[in-house]
View 1: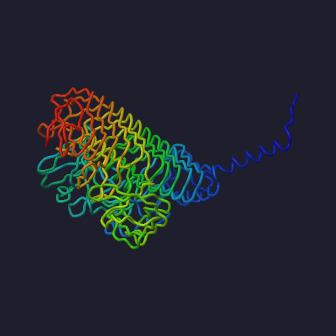
View 2 (view 1 turned 30 degrees about the vertical axis):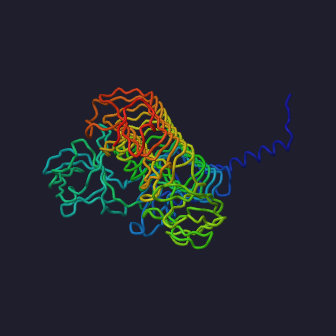
View 3 (view 1 turned 30 degrees about the horizontal axis):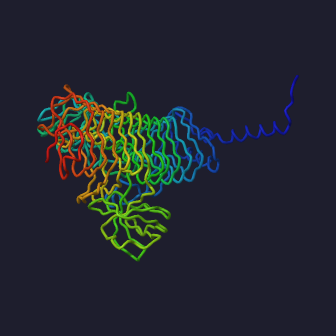
Amino acid sequence: MMIHKPVTTLFALLLSLTAAAQQQVNVSSFGVLPNTFTDATAGVQQAIAACKDKPGAVLEFSAGRYDFYPEDAVKKEYFISNTSSETEVSNKIKTIGLFFENFKGLTIEGNGATFVFHGKMITWLFDHCEDITLRNISVDFERPSMSEMTLKTVTPQFVVAAVHPDSKFTIVNQRLEWYGEKWGMKQFHAVLADTARGIYTYSSWNPFYKSQATLIAPDLVKFSGDFSAFKGAPGNVLTVRDGIRDQVGAFMQHCKNVRLENINMHYMHGLGIVAQFSENLHYSHVQVMPAENSGRVMASFADGMHFSGCKGEIEITAAHFKGLHDDPVNVHGTHLVITEKISPRVLKLRFMHHQTYGFAAFFAGDSIMFVHSAALQGYGTGLVTAARLISAREMEVTLSKDIPSDVRTGDCLENITWVPSLTIRNCRFEGVNTRGLLVTTRKKVVIENNIFYRTGMHAILIADDASSWYESGPVQDVSITGNTFEGCGYNQAPGNYVIAIAPENHELVKGYMVHRNIRIENNDFKIYDYPLLTARSTEHLIFSHNRITWMNDYMAPQGPLRAAFSFNACAGVIVTDNDFKVPFKPVVELQNMLPKEVKGPLPKKAR
């Protein structure tokens, strides 16, 4: 027997199906097709605009290659943390390939598409967006702003190198000049990649710049000059970029609930994926590494992921970082210095680091902490009722109560509302000459089941400072467990500790510790040198149930026998139940503290 559905039910179903179809926006409807090698920028931006005010919309690409050029890209001013000073880049107008502003409930589905960018651009940008997902895309550049060449012959008098086909160059008056799409290179920052051993070290373009260059075959150049101090060897790859962070790889600000899923960033120009004053960021299966079979070794001009002044949850799972000129992950806030008490409740503040300024760092309703700059000691809290930028370098904040009498100019204000919790799990860090992970946040931090493979500096650095980068703040609950650390720190001898807890407090205050509650447990440390862990001004630090083995086939120790542990002005430290299979006797070195503050069987000595 046939059952007839009521007409109203069928009508509702049709409406539902029609609405669902309307939410699917394919870029092909705007004339954007893959693999045409034409400029997709304007058509994609039209497709983006068609998703506006459609919560639940899906912006869809078909698999294939899409090219983005700067001519039709969105141009907009953005001040981005840790990028460039007024002198380095006076004009903060950014060039943006895919621009999303004030979107809510949007999914960008790449279906495996590859976005190829031309010139120097921000690849994608989310501004004041909420509930947004970007997934299943790869990002690359037609001409990366990183130049690469493989060394073939190295002698004190000459070097022969094969230039990667993506690294455009010409020889002018016997000097090799790097160039790209509407850019040249006049400043040089070089890193030498020994890809066979996974070792990335600082180098120099200077001997090549001063040499005489001769093209001896297609993409094969002979450099004649003084290479007596050059450390490269045949098979190494010399990677060169300029030092100016005029763009970033990708950017989001004032966003909430952002998901990045299955993203391959094969190259990024500038700082990397930057999140600034955003909330609840979940990154899953994000790779920052060159495309397979590309022949390139570098994927990022600087950092991989950078988080400045964020809050809520930051979660990074199953990410892979390989081939970066700076830190794969950096999470921090920003200390602003108090320059003037304008009235009993109003303070004038200043951005101090030359590359961080121009954005609002406090908002009405935020909680703040007063911090003694030299000691990094918090000594009082307050509530912001009003905040405004009065110049690119200065802010004015109004508090709900009178400013305490002991607040003085030169101290700092820390925003303790905009601080995130952090989870980094099942990730791999390698192919970097700097650190693996930087963490300065007072919320819960979990670093679990990751591999830190031959990072050039500390695998993990917990800092906090109000004198150099002005990156805040203290940590209060950190778990580092189940990780593998192999051959880390070779660019930092003699202080090449695998993990460093190193707040830059230049004044020690008796009884006050900057950091606390850090647990380093059940990890594998494969070391080639003696330093293992250093900590300063930290209480309740536990290093237990870790396995430490010696690498016999990696490199020789980079200095004489040194203490495995170095603690300065710490309290309540526990170093116990660790399994050492190393050819030396581990020692705990102490400074500005008593031996009773360290519990465990290892011998202790004063520095």
